[in-house]
Length: 450
Image (cartoon, rainbow, N blue to C red; front, side, top):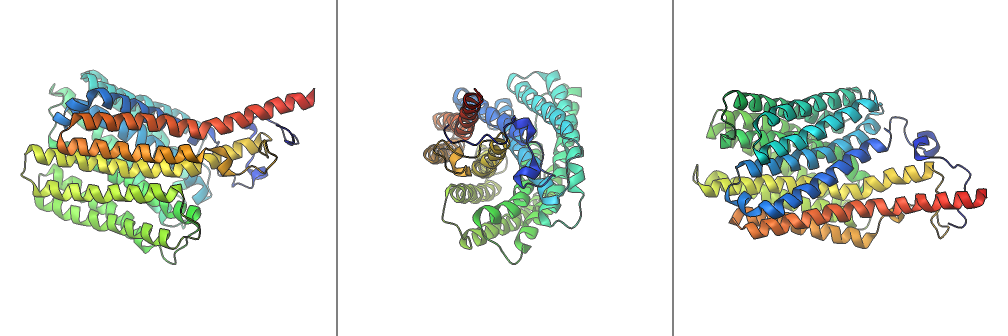
């Protein structure tokens, strides 16, 4: 790497926020990157499982195989990725450090182990393992929330911190919900005798209460920053966050009480909240001061999946109670909500990960490209591969949802293969160029030292 300055050589562990002009509250880069890496691995694993289990999953969307794959996705993929984003941005937004990064290393490790164990126990129907794995996941959640509690408790930092605070409470609630149910079923020795209402309630408090509110809260800060679009009021985001919090709580009560009236009323509140979120997105995109780019593509398409999820939910409510059609539509709704979160997370990862790796490279002394040009974020990934990954992951979720709605196992398997491929392409695209730059810089440092 000719012309690369070597005035500040050092390993990435010497990462200095002050030298890079970053807030001191920013956590070590390996912390969020660790969460993102586990999420990518879980997506690849879930995709491989879907290739071989597609026909059996679409035939019984509430069966143990579907539940196992759902846990792998919701915990291993979506939750890990969202936790990575929260560990990166909540300390920045609040201006307050985590209690101690080590808590999140342990918490993240236990949560990952518990997530894998839960998915495996459901897939293989290993009764004792589900309780043990659930306990690991709950301990992990407690450690993670304790570590995040310090920045989350800062007052006067806006709706993003308020939303993250609410979503953290929802995360604890869904963990307690899950472990309580697992212990109860284990005690009665009637494993997998799951009531559809309980499954749906558990899924929605997780995907809308925890993941949905987290995304809405973080996007309130990230969208204006990445799109250079600033609004005069964040009232629509407030409606979205508080509407989801209230609506999900009432919905879970309605499902547990088997009350169609309560669940329907809650559904109306949730739809209003989600429409408010979509209105926020429309305002931000229309008011942007940057040209259209990949991120906008991801968030707009993810919003389309959200609209699809609302449609599936309404169709499910209108279908005959207890029918196979209602089960199919409910499954398609849950996967559509998962696609909403996943596409948004992957899209933002193409901005967030280069930002983190840029800091690592700068701290290691890499300030220029091989062509002696100042290092910028766009140098750290291949845009053609990024666009191809966008098409692959969008197609994958589309095939899976259509496969579930039509009970077509082949489509489900094709979509799963696409997601496995997307996990590989996104991960390699975000990792290869920074790794090569570090390698070239090390060679240049040795050559100049010699």
